[in-house]
Length: 131
Image (cartoon, rainbow, N blue to C red):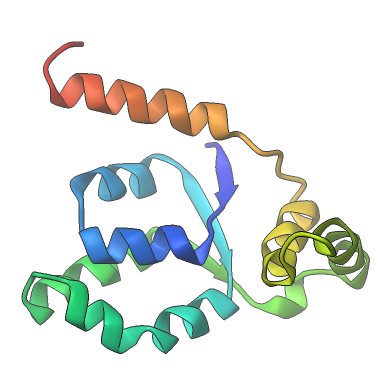
């Protein structure tokens, strides 16, 4: 199964929208995220509760589903070497991405955006009964 590192912004978007596409996506691939993603999500708890149009029970159910499909990786799993490489790569971009890049280096995962794009297109075509 293809594996990816998932950014907290994607998690945030998935939890807010509760779109079926996210359920399909999370069940079709293996996802990892650094543990600080939980801290980031929790920081915006009130915003999530305010912006979602669904009942809190539905939000809870969807959120639990999403997190049943994602492996949350403790920061100490990222070796110092991977962390240092990630820090160098992110130095002029966004230091908040160091954990994601470090995790990707640690797990030797390549960026596979095309795989996700192909999957999303196929899913869209299937849902519109085109395929």
